Image (cartoon, rainbow, N blue to C red; front, side, top):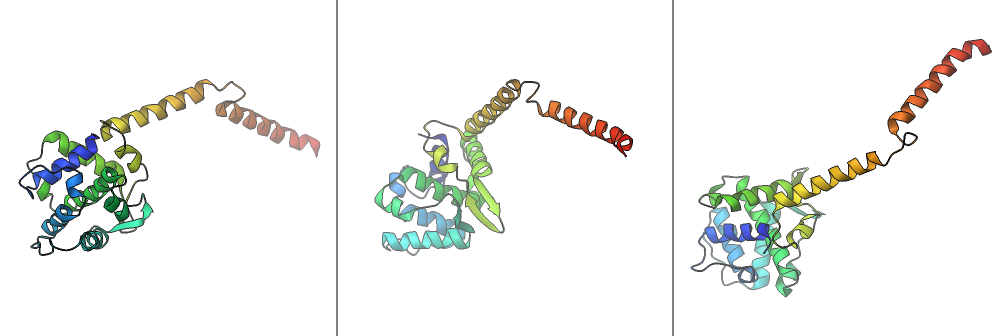
Length: 204
């Protein structure tokens, strides 16, 4: 399982909303997710018996109003996919990430007593994939690709991406000849301008 997804599930299970350990499939109908919402709102959960569509609507309203989630920016969140079990792990993880980010931005109460590895992974997830702009929150478009990768820590993924970018830059620089070098072009341009400046009085 992707380490980011594992950490998010660990967060949910740490809330003790069920007598048994939750899996992604257990979150599909929205019952547990709605319990998380009411817990974050510090309100009693009075809507457990609602239909799946009603639960999804209540959760979506909370994400939009309280979490300030803007579905029009960044990567999308599909409730239809959750209902139909399409890319279920990815979509559920997005919901959990927004919920835990909301808690982090408030009083961090639900992160207490978590294992350090899970807490670190969640911190890296929120730092790398949750964005804020113009008063709204949205999810980085790279999030889907990361969540679909197995056994990958977001810290390792970020490190590998940085290393690849650095290698690419080094390769690009080493492949440049003197004629292609930006520094060489700059020297040529300066020399030409200097010669033109010196020569111009003689042509008058």
